Length: 180
Image 1 (cartoon, helix red, strand yellow):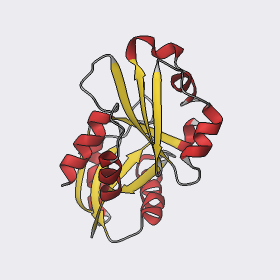
Image 2 (tube, one colour):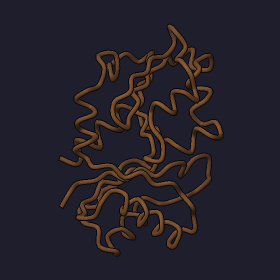
Image 3 (cartoon, rainbow, N blue to C red):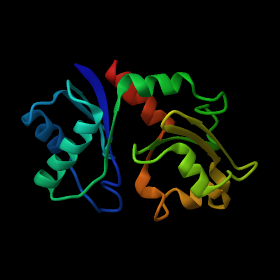
């Protein structure tokens, strides 16, 4: 069995799209996923399965529709792929500097990081940095000046936001740690 991470996009934000992680875990166990663990309330699920990530994304999406009545995008990735991405993180990403906010953008398979970059444009010099690796984009920005950052303004915009889900460096590291 492979270890996977399912990332649910846009749940439990400002009281919308509420999904309890304990209830989601139970629902996933009930339909046969094993070693299910959740992390935080933002839709991070570790589990094991023999199926492909494409099939898993579809099946978990269907489970959420049936069980919670919500049409939530689900991105599933092998834990080993995420671990590999972290091993290729740029040196500026994931530091202990509290003035810099580090994120990993997970790009849904129907598009590419290059396409997302073409839609958003260059990062604002001096305020943010990006680097692409496989289906991921490492993104860091100045926390105090984030409102002036190009990528900050556009990652949730229509035509862009639905193709990605974002997790902090600490969350991604914790998911990898929990899955080992």
